[in-house]
Length: 357
Image 1 (cartoon, rainbow, N blue to C red):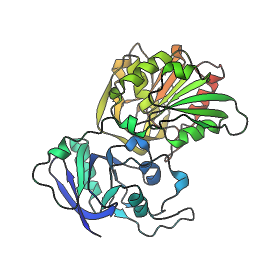
Image 2: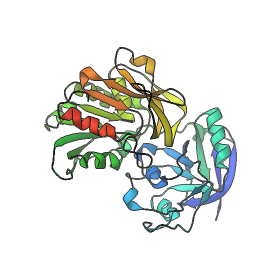
Image 3: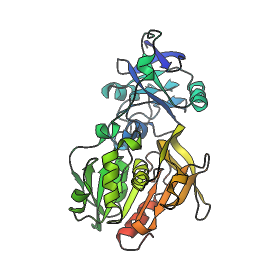
Image 4: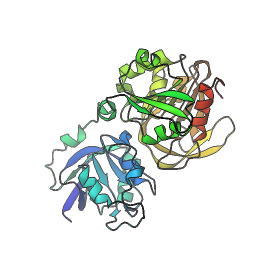
């Protein structure tokens, strides 16, 4: 393997071996704590503009399974401790290095991912670059990098229709800010026809379709960038049942006058504990976000329903008078636990006229 360097925006350098596509890249370096699910991670559009670092030391051991893809790969780079070159799984089609090459994603292995994770936890998320040769002392290109406009990059530009499995019960408009495929699967499996719409669709266009409910998807980047989407969500609230996930959760809060803040190092992985405030029950959830809704900003606007059990940040909000609820975590999982899949059933009940279920 050819030598490569991971250069952090604070000037620290980690030498390793190049993997994936030939090239160099700059992005926002983030870490994810999932032990499995690396293919779902790499194909999650919410990672657009970011260099993904896996904290679990061995990655690629079960190869590449296209059926597990959640979307296209928009990652800027990939960092692992050890990359498996000989996967063993009956579903595997080929090895992970080939996937990275085919998607144009350059990466690095053989670095101390535990040490780098501790640096990010202590100093916060930072930009980084993957280079063959060390750059000059000037790190301005790394330090000034921004993944602005990420939602427009990942959203599908055309309307797509996905039929219900079995008897069709409802029609759902999914506004695609970077939607994971399993959101669609979860809705279709519950008898919903899903009409996927681009991120810049208007409220009037959504309502003209005669749908029974609206799903606001996950997506990448700073939620406050999406000024037009926020305005359109505000027009939809109270007109139809609405269920928001991740970025959809944040945009709904902003539409109602709330605020969001960037987290020090975010929540990414398949083992994030979330507490339901109504009964104190804890759920293990899949998460991927670098921003959170400020709970205090939602007083008088929504009802706090879930909090993160580690840092107590906002993980869910209910809006009973508007027929809307949102969560920061991913009930569709993929990868990760399916403990909160019942939230899709709640959305189905709302569309069936059972209030906020």
